[in-house]
Length: 350
Ligand code: KG4
Ligand code: ZN
Picture 1: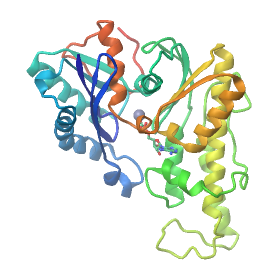
Picture 2 (picture 1 turned 120 degrees about the vertical axis):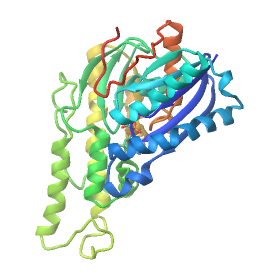
Picture 3 (picture 1 turned 90 degrees about the horizontal axis):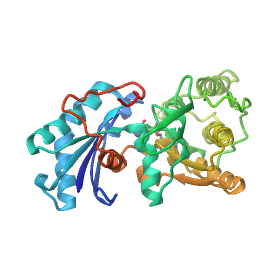
Picture 4 (picture 1 turned 30 degrees about the vertical axis):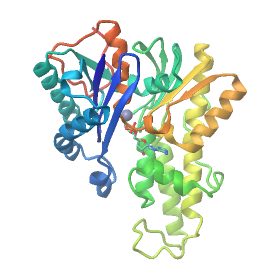
């Protein structure tokens, strides 16, 4: 069976064609980074309008790349939770229209579970049960994943998501959006010990939550301090930053990144201990971070943990991970055309 998967939860318009044997026939991702860059973050209304413009060309391209026509598609899968309401609606309406026109079934995709399923796809073997660490622009959560579709929340951020912290710190430093890759690049050659930034909640191993807003504020103070100590720093690259030490941005980026990595890696270890599991799956945009990947793999070797991190092209939003719909297909969990979007967190399965 050929499944057309659609993903429009945030600012990527994506379509993929996968089979019920988890083969990937095509994948297309239209990024909106250029549209949101000058605002330093995703503007929801711009995102949903851009999805409207892009969804049909993206679907056409996915079909074309797979050498298929709409009549060869046997089901449509669409991410309907969580995400931006307007963005989610565009994917859902497109999916429903195709299902109605072609008389084929509709399958729902939980975007967070799909991020973990990216690990299942690349592992090409079962990865469940596992601890799932989902780290993206909107979420930072740890789950006990009983199987592909049954997740129990172990802990999550009580304020900013990890990706959001990367994006906001990058904006403070005048580095381009999205902030994660910019910070990673800036951190190369920087000293991760130059600033001793806070690792909130890390010391409490019983608590599997995260907090990044204090870290963000600490970075803000470090920037202010360099201003008041007589030097001049302005995030506008056109202005004169001559008096700022050359290593200021790289040291600050490296120290910030190290603090985030310490928290993510530390809480993942705590979750493995608490659940007694020895498989860790990591997905979401921040899982693309090279320093984090290095740390997690060193840690996994030491702790004898089976680690699966989504491959780079499946970390940030894409529709291939919508292949999780195959699990619903096999379980006969089809949706009616009344299916709605759920922008907030997970809803329990009916
Ligand atoms: O999963 P994703 O594409 O979208 C959401 O579902 O939110 O994640 C996007 C987030 C952004 O905050 C971006 O800055 C971050 O992932 N990100 C990274 C890296 N690449 C993307 N963060 C750290 N290091 C990276 N290399
Ligand atoms: Zn995502």
